[in-house]
Image 1 (cartoon, one colour):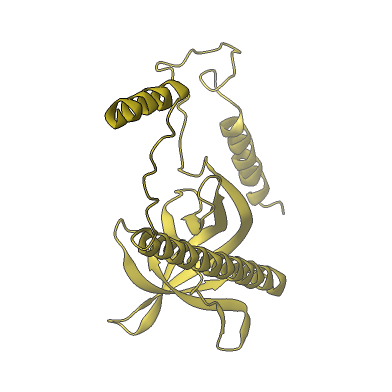
Image 2 (cartoon, rainbow, N blue to C red):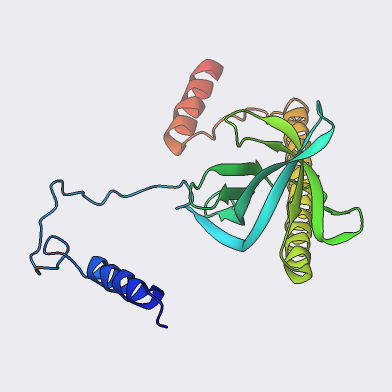
Amino acid sequence: MATTTEPTTLRREEEEDEDSKPSAEDEDTGAQVAPIVKLQEVAVTTGEENEDVLLDLKSKLYRFDKEGNQWKERGVGTVKLLKHKESGKVRLVMRQNKTLKICANHLVLPTMSVQEHHGNDKSCVWHAADFADGELKEETFCIRFPSVENCKAFKDKIEEITESEAKDSGENEEATAAASLIEKLSVGGEGKEDKPEAKEAPLSSEEKKDDNEKVEKSTN
């Protein structure tokens, strides 16, 4: 004896097929619709135009919350080391992906020290006076990289920059001290120099003749 489930199933499939067919409204007519508002391209400045990129790595940044005594995620993005073309100063800048919001923005100073974070060879920590929020604040940062190689490259580059800046700073201090010493010596020696005595100019032949005539008249 035949069952009635098969026709019912077929009808459902036919109905589904008809529903899946595109209606006249959904059909692509090929007509092109012009946009209502035409947007113009706008040049966006990041403040990095006068800087050379020394390092550019993907990473995740954390900052230590002293009040809560815990690490808080600052953002996921790209960390860069940028060197200014004129001043030669190097700064660390990190922006979040997509939004490009600044997570960290501070100078790399000779006193900056990057250390491994609790035995994790993919993370490292450091202290800095950061300006990411529009005002200088002492922050403790922790950065984590996808690989050990990237973390090592970051640490090595920071150490290279700090050593170079410390050397330049020492040379500048020596040059300043030498210039100050020379200035003191030159100023101190000015009062001790003997002024040359004024000498009378030699008499001309006519002046000598006049003097001789005056002497002869006086003797007569």
